[in-house]
Image (cartoon, rainbow, N blue to C red; front, side):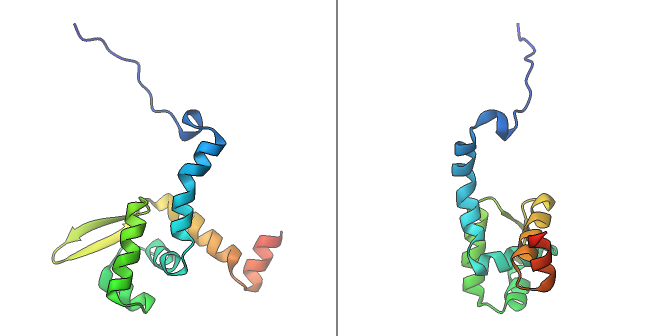
Length: 119
């Protein structure tokens, strides 16, 4: 006779220590640490795009864009959806777009970035 199990999803905080969370997060942050990949993520924070659109917007060769997108997909930061004869790439979730834009603003060498960072 089957039993009903009382199952709930555990948050990351409940499953791992801060050191374990840091080990899980480090590869993703490393992926974002490359200027080309961060550029692509910032473009995708504006909305989903095809490789061709990313190539034109980033000013990179198609092979370089595809290479960096593959690394971002491996880390679960970017998803791909087939659409016709091309693939559309998007951030894994909208929750990633805001922090990435905020970090870019803080790191920018603009008066607004310096002001936001130093207050």
